[in-house]
Length: 136
Image 1: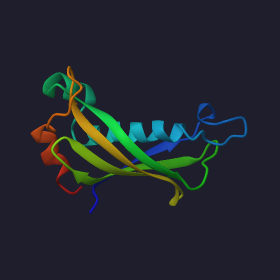
Image 2: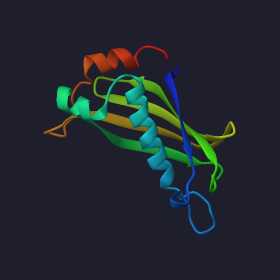
Image 3: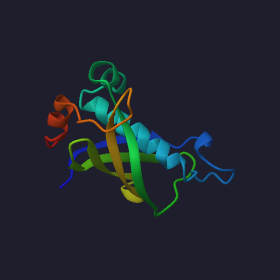
Image 4: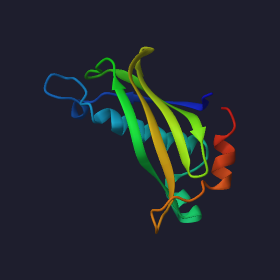
């Protein structure tokens, strides 16, 4: 079950592409990172304040990504975030990049909550866990 579906609109700019106007494969990771950041903000959690108040960071532990079709210069994309699983210190997210409802990229991202000083896994802060656990 996916919860907290979120979508961030992204325009493809020249800086995102190669000389042929095709989006670089690594640029999709930037788009997805931006969507995760904005998803947290939409849930009411500023990344900077998570660090300052709860003393935690979120780090990507692993990801699996499939590139299905290319995006090109000036495309208008939607980058989605949905929670697949949540554990004590980890969140498994499903992310997609769509253009006109056509799936271009899909990924599964494993994110771990770590202590800001130790960089070792810690429990996800209770207020965030509660917010994530509720369907959007």
